[in-house]
Length: 102
Image (tube, rainbow, N blue to C red; front, side):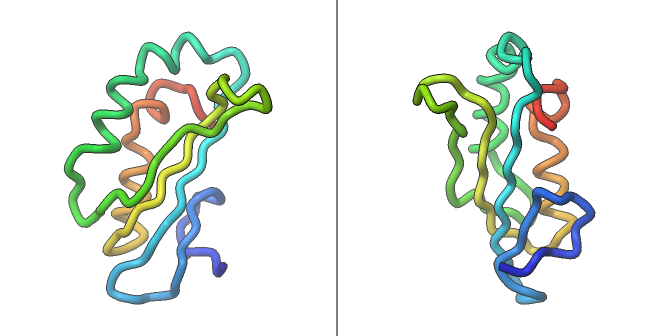
């Protein structure tokens, strides 16, 4: 899968320069941030499933530890007009602003 022109190393694009591209946004939590994650979790879900300019969320969910229960990060698949729109979604997520994810 070719990497997008975005500066974020965890933001990937499924195609080069089509009208709308699919991106996968992955985030791994910093160790010891579960309490903060749980504080912003409802806001994070509302944000992910809310309206976004030039972006449609296709799929989203937690990344789990080997125990199958502990959230250790998240993954979001979006369709976006351009790299800037995708990066805006990544940057504005409550888990990004709350210092939970790397």
